[in-house]
Figure 1: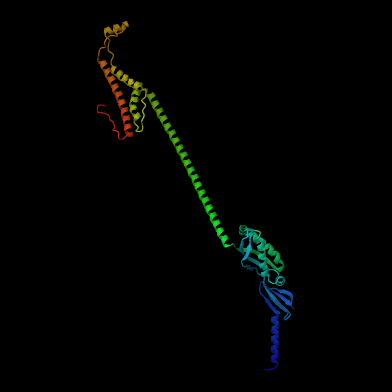
Figure 2 (figure 1 turned 90 degrees about the vertical axis):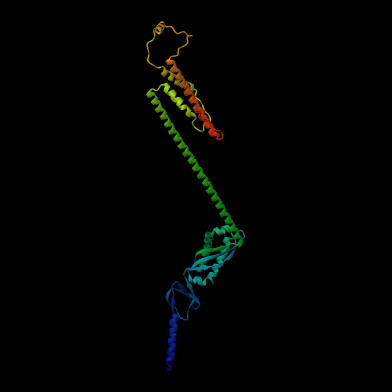
Amino acid sequence: MDPVVIPLLVVVLVVVFLVASTVRIVPQARRYNIERFGRYHRTLQPGLNLVLPVADRTNTKLDVREQVYSSDPRPVITEDNLVVNIDTVLYYQITDPRAAAYEVADYLQAIDQLTVTTLRNVIGSMDLEETLTSREEINSRLRAVLDDATGKWGIRVNRVEIKAIDPPHTIKEAMEKQMRAERDKRAAILHAEGERQAKILTAEGTKQKDILEAQGTQQAMILRADGEAKAVELVFQAVHRNNADAKVLAYKYLETLPHLAGSDNNTFWVIPGELTEAIRTVTRAFGDQSTEGPAGPASPGEAATAGDGGTPDAGRTPQLDAGSTVSLRAAAAAAEAERQAAAAVSDAKAEAEAAQSPQAPRRGRTSGD
């Protein structure tokens, strides 16, 4: 091999090494800290960067995107002396690569220890119930303390979240029993409220029903009374229009009398006091009709007696003539009518008594009646 080629190859290799050492390509969202002779010189930005070979050295490569760090569960004592395990989730971002590399040795460990210390201070002033219900307050206080401490480290804490709070097993069982009791209580209250509402609605419905039935009964009674009043008025007008005399009215009175006890539920009858007067009226009516006839001429003796204004002898026995016979028939007819009316009342009373006591034999009218 030519002795000139070997030195030439060595020179080419040295040039390639120097060029490779001079060029630095930084990816997006990355930052490189460059030290020159062991001292921080500058931070390389994303893209093509040139450095001095041998003199410049890359110390740290940092990712400036937002990072997520989840810590392990840590025991924390509450104000009521209960040990709970709390693990947190931390969202942070590197804002100053130089400070993150040179101000703190391990920023993740520092943030973790600071989070645990702050949690113990915050949770130590709360009881278990308040700890379980005050996550937002705990997150806010953690973030405020971490922001103040990590600012000089070139790190910004964007968000701190409590991922889980695990109380002891016995406390979990007690909480489950309490929760079950609360649910049973709410269920009993809701059931009682439902029954109360149902009873109220039932009472309201019964009230409305009674009111509507009373209003319907009232309207029916008013309409029935109006109808009866109009019927009585029409009957009264018809009687006065046709000029009915007392004889016809007395006959209708006797005709209606048997219907007084027509109902099966009647156990008490009142016989009107006008019954005798009505019978007498009918009797006189039959008597007047039977004695009516053509007026004949009076005998000379009767005319003389009438003209003298004398009266027949009180002790004289009246003679039976045709008119007297008709009068006796009218009286017999009136007596028959009275007997039939009394028999009708007796039959109605007997039927009512038979309806009340089925074992008793019913008394009917005889063929002679």
